[in-house]
Length: 406
Image (cartoon, rainbow, N blue to C red; front, top):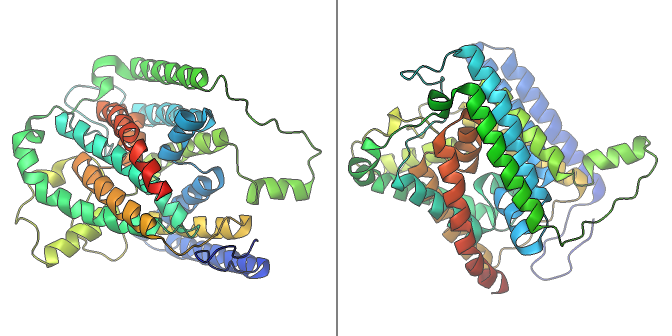
């Protein structure tokens, strides 16, 4: 592991210390999962959520899975692999969700929605919130899920981005009632299988994803990708490919889609903002900053942001597993590279986090909760979030470039 080369870079731990720390983290995670899994049904659910969070965090870290970074790689560098990984994650998850939902609700009758699926209201407020979220991604340099796994890599921006996200949630709560009464209360909740059936939803979704994949390939057609030389595979090379080298983006995308469907089958839709939102709401509520009533909020599908009543929650242990596994993975691979934050890191993190927090609260989730889980479930809200967040990200890229140069 390289040591400090500038005044702002912190000394990295030795290889031996990194490996021992990673082993200790892995043992703690395994112990926690086993300990929770041996209890009552609620504890077993927490154990499975912790395990899935750890797998999710490890996959994100190993494959560098980030909605913003992958899209920026295509736009600025002409590399389509990351965007193709996102599209593959969406395709795999849609197929898995349709199988699960179809077994639970064989006929998608108009008066019923699949249990717990992230199917939200579609309105101009959703588009605005997603646009603001995309702008926040560009300013901060990552989506919320990527900031969580980069927290485990020692990112100097991630702590400020996550703090800003919590503050942004508070701003979202303060603006919620006005937006709800003016727009959201009358917004339709559109589940595509109601109109197209399961086969039609799956077919149309895959067709749209295929068209987007062709656009990504067309955009990257002039950028030669590095060729990898084939080498005989032995135990050492296999271990290095798994634990040290970055995973191919498509592998990460496929596994993310599988995790999403598995999570919905056993626990609930994937999401990473429910715990952040609940902590923000509970804190603001104790400080008497929020209105006495947040109209209609707790009745909507999405990443729940109820006032906390228990120390451990499904989403809370999921996020802890995500960060812990990312830290262990980055220590083993040598990606753990802490650095003292510069002023630009703090400004970008707090500013982008505020925007993402307001957008995630108002949209009832982020790129994982609304975009990924929503599209997987056949929700029109997921597609609206995808388009508007992309537009917001494009608008924020010039500002991001100025912040990076600062």
